[in-house]
Image 1 (tube, rainbow, N blue to C red):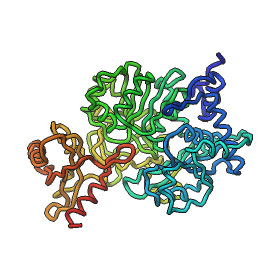
Image 2: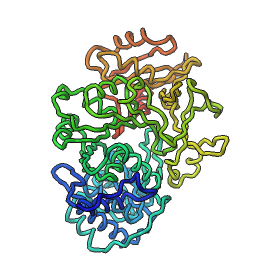
Image 3: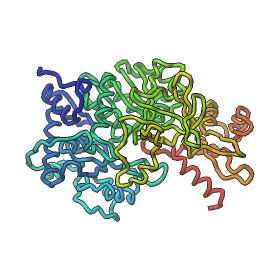
Image 4: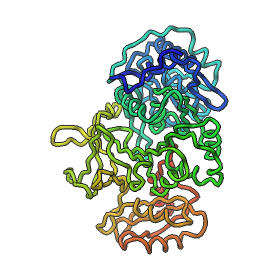
Length: 511
């Protein structure tokens, strides 16, 4: 065997494509990706990246310019993403779950000079105009013909070269393009190298490749030379079967996926003893669910709290701090996080306010929106720029952060602040409640009043409301419960509270 590929922790700055090159040189036959029945080793994948990079160069797409990708998970998708990076080209991955109008608008906004897609997405775009060349990833013959036989000419990639444009989920309005640099992503890869991603690890990912949630595990897995198993569509039982079969060592799941996996009657019959580390991010992770994961699933559990925009990240190493499962952990090394009052002044531990963060892991800005970039920032007295998270929380005396809610989701009822997360925690304790979300709706008497949307496994909403209100403070009590089959969620599991509010308004207005 050749000399092992470099460990990112040993390098001051590098690029992910260079790490892939090192893995291919060291062990070309080691499997890089598995998707369904398809697999590709590092040697072949590295060569495929070269072909993608060369073809983009043949299109005269220069370093720093962009392509857009909107397609289902596949090996060609991964090759296009990483091959573009090798050419210094910035990648704009777009969610196929977006509306056709949103997809077309994001392709145009990104300035992507080639649009990579597949049949299902293109079928939805029949009435939309995509004004750049389209390359299909789901037709092997067409993709092979597009690749051609151009030769790749190496390029120099600077730390500030744009790596990707990640579009916000749209849960808080029109998606904005969040631009990350190679330096920011290198920091993620280096941090991941400390979590045992390596040539003998097997990383199972079931969230889509356009998601920053996936990137938090995908990038360090590729950087470490892991075998990466991608699930194009999540199914809890199939996930467990796959994890057992491939002897999974690492995985990233969003909290709703953990809930679905742990709720399966068959869970305890699967051999998950190969698990080294599990990760979670992107949505509230109830303490009771974390405890269940720790009790029944081997390996460690790490939760990340932060924004796609970066700024500050908290990390909860749950297996080391079982008494802090109600928190999202402490700021990562080199991350400065603070809590601000309404007047913008810093608050002491125990006080509730908006969370802001500063670190080297911060976006370059919102693509083409400098005004929006400035709105997202708070400038400290010493001149350092912090990113506003839009979340409300408090630090305890040990430096652990407890999240309350999104700032916009806080309910002001009769002059009292009500945090939906407090009410949702009580709802979660009821044996008939599968999942619940609380939103504020207009009230002539109180200004706003809390309403819960719940999915039940039995019982009825009126009985649940009576039970919950008996356990809440007088100012917190639910004015109504709406029983639903399931909560509306984004593709990575975030509850779409705006849809719940809009639906309630439509119902109460007789629409």
